[in-house]
Image (tube, helix red, strand yellow):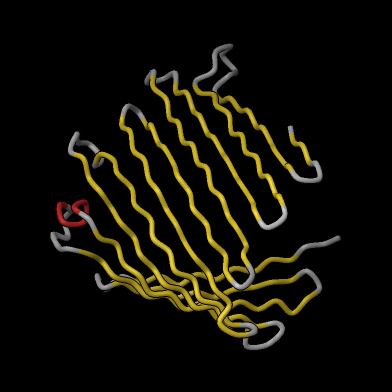
Length: 204
C-alpha cells in the first residue's frame, strides 16, 4: 500500500514465504514515510522479519532529517538494529555546501555501536569522509571521495590496525531522454579495489 499527499508520502509492504504447507516459514513488513515541509525533510523507515524456522527475528529502524539553508544542506540520522538477539545503534551527520556554481563539497561522519558477529564483545566503528562533486558540463558530473573507517572493531579484526582508508572516483553521464550511466572506481589502503558500472533507461 502507498500514500502520496502534498507534504507526506508513505508505503507499507508485507510479505511471507514458505506458505505452501499452510504455515509461513518467515514473514515480515517494511514501512516508510517522508515528510517535506519547505526547507525541511524528514524520513522514517522500519523493517521487521520473523523467521519461524529458527524462532528468531530481525528489526531495523531508521529516522533522518534534512534541512536546506541557502547554500548549505545539513542532515542527521539515527538507526537501531536488533538482529537475532544482537543489538546495535548508530548516529550520523553531514553538511554540504555549494562552493561555486556546479561545485559542491560534502562532509560526513557516522558512528555505530554493536556486537561483533559471533561474540558478545561490544565494538564501535566510525567512518569519516569528504566528497567533492563537480558538474563539468550539463550532462557530465564527476565525484571524488576520500575517507576512512576507525574504531576498536577495526583494531580487533584480522587487520589488527587502527584504521582503513579509501578513495573513490566516479563519473556520471546523463545525456537526456531518460538515459543515465555511471562509472565508479574505489581503492583502499588494504590493496583492495572495486569498479562498478551502471546504466539506466526510463520510458514514459
